[in-house]
Image 1 (cartoon, one colour):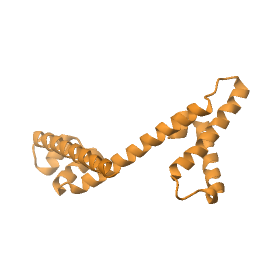
Image 2: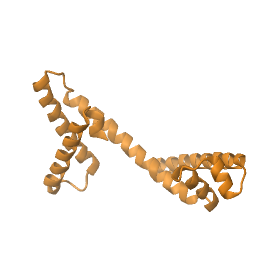
Image 3: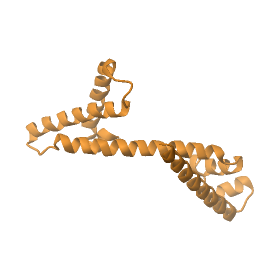
Image 4: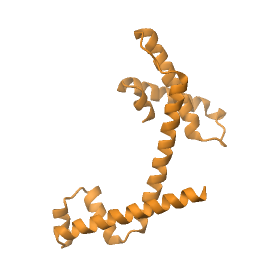
Length: 156
């Protein structure tokens, strides 16, 4: 996602991704396990993206982003990626705490993508009851996720 957000051409982004993957494989023995793998891999991606824009600049005379700007964008991306992972883990935790009935309704609605009318028919409930239940589930998940993220931040 980082590469495709930085490189406008899909095919070029795919080529860079392949180059990054190859470089990671070739240089894996130089990776320091005490450091963040994501930071290390993003550093490699940054360099390959910078090489791409340098090459494009020579071919098309376009202005390229300087190294500092690319580094700042990578840092923002890494922070956002980390935050999304925290949220995903919190969501998984909170989903595990839901009752079987609530999980069933969520699965029917969001995984099987059934309409509320179809869920109501399948479960022998009114459409309004399904709306209310979905609202309660969303509120419970939102509260649980907020508490979980807050607790994780307090432990840091």
